[in-house]
Amino acid sequence: MNRLQVLNFGSLNIDHVYQVPHFVQPGETLACTAYAKFAGGKGLNQSVALARAGVHVAHAGKIGTDGGFLAETLQAAGVDTRFLLHGDGPTGHACIQVDATGQNLILLHPGANREISDAEIVTILDQVPTGTILLLQNEISGMPTLIREAKKRALPVAINPAPCGPEVAGYPLDLVDLLFVNEVEAAQLVGETGAPDELLAELAARFPAGEIVMTLGGDGACYAKGDERFQVPSPPVTVVDTTSAGDTFTGYFLAAKLRGFSAREAMRIAAKAGSIAVSRAGAAVSIPAADEVFD
Image (cartoon, rainbow, N blue to C red; front, side, top):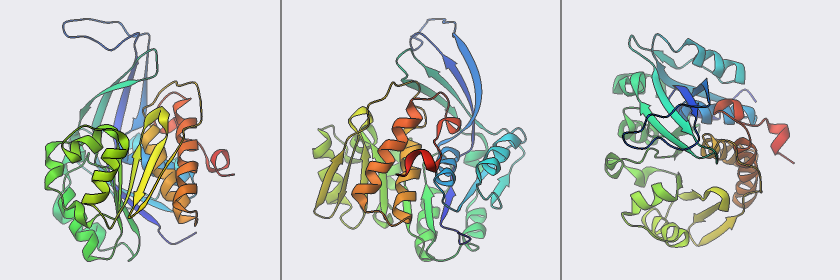
């Protein structure tokens, strides 16, 4: 399909991944058992997931002088990089610990991701066809501007507000059409902890006009829109690395909806894609291709 379907305005990171027997504790020096460098960032991962799912996706974001291989990674996956910005400083990077159970702990340096100006945002959005989905995370600058300017241009907005810092409370989330969160992010948005069904109900009450997708790790994911509520399970797999699980889920959910699948089927497909991703090491490299996921 030639028409641009999704513009992902998101982060691009260099991921330094350390395999560890357990997460480093305060005051502890711990030798890792393996090290690898990957292309990453929630934005890049979601663009790769969309492209591998067969979506015509363009990535907008900013890399530094050391980020050339991130652009190459996007292009190799089939992502349109015409909107990629280049800065003079370092590219964003993450230090990721992955423990023996496959869980991860991430320390992030935003780098060029936080140097995107409002003027650059407006220039790029002016070139995007009406109706294109704008996909966002929370690892770049200019989030309120992106949401408001997208709505002015009739661009549906999907957002995964991760990491979900206190600044998210000031974002115009009432303008968002599709909200992706995990349980921790849901609790942060709601302002209190609770069972998944309670968090989902509270989010649905706060954002009655939008779709809400909440991922639950090994327990699958749940969905709400208006009075519609349901949960889908996650296929059982041996977990190797959960780094790209949520990003893969997001990409494949949107891809399935763009293919015309119902929300319930899109959730099932996204859960399957996420389960494949966690069975592999790395971030972008772990994301499955369309023929591995779609029945």
